[in-house]
Image (cartoon, rainbow over all chains, first blue to last red; front, side, top):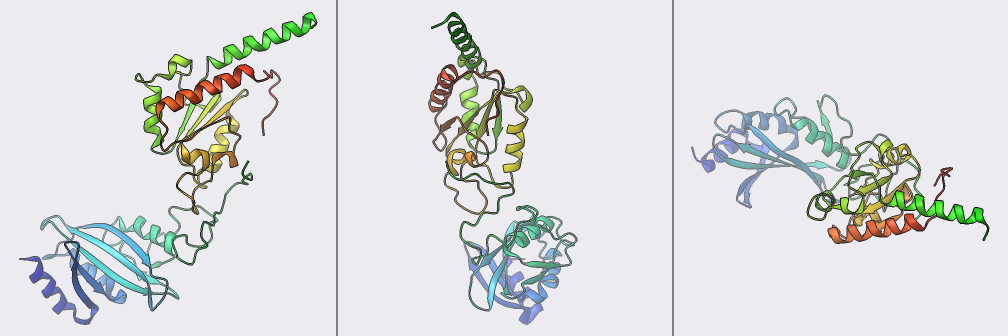
Length: 161
Length: 158
């Protein structure tokens, strides 16, 4: 079955949970509601979509507006050799999304990275703690509200000689 | 000049000569500059010609610390520990723009020059530096070792 037919079918199946469909850089993009992220992803993992690989999960901070944080998922189907991009916007106040660790194991560290860098929480994650920065680091450095160039040394630093 | 002064000067010269041609280095390699270090260390450019050919992978056996590449705040305590583990007399070369000044990275993660953590003897800039520059830096360090006061009571550098 062709990718376009599948996307249409997916859209009619989930109705309002899929807010928009577009194409960019050669891949299909689905804009979805964050609340139904887990059910959508479960469907995409199964046949006929068969997106067996979670290539990447990242986040974008758009600073202002309702959907300040936008999660971006990249999926890849080994059997059909196509990719799919999923976007979901989260509010600024308390950004929470469903954890996908149960579906793809590598979502574990990807979600920890997004939590570390952007402060997005993932409900249902088994062990959500910082991945790249260290114990005692305050704030989330890739948020636009993080002070520019603010370092948090672990040991005392000498002044520039 | 008394006879004793003459002897001391000769001893210092001999110590300096011995030390500058037997630099056992510890490569603290974190980033892409490591490729340039390999080039400088192996047969094409061959730092063994300058007596620095023996790479030691234990800081306790080394007396030259080569900090090659970006050092982050997460890594800074490790670098400090490695430096503290080395025995006196010891020297440090900051290899590449990142180790010298943080290089292109001025952000929350990267230490703005390793001299904020440990004392540095020779700075080799470049992104990455050419092996010729590394050899030049090594020769400058040898010159420094030859002409510095040879302290055999190992006063701590801070």
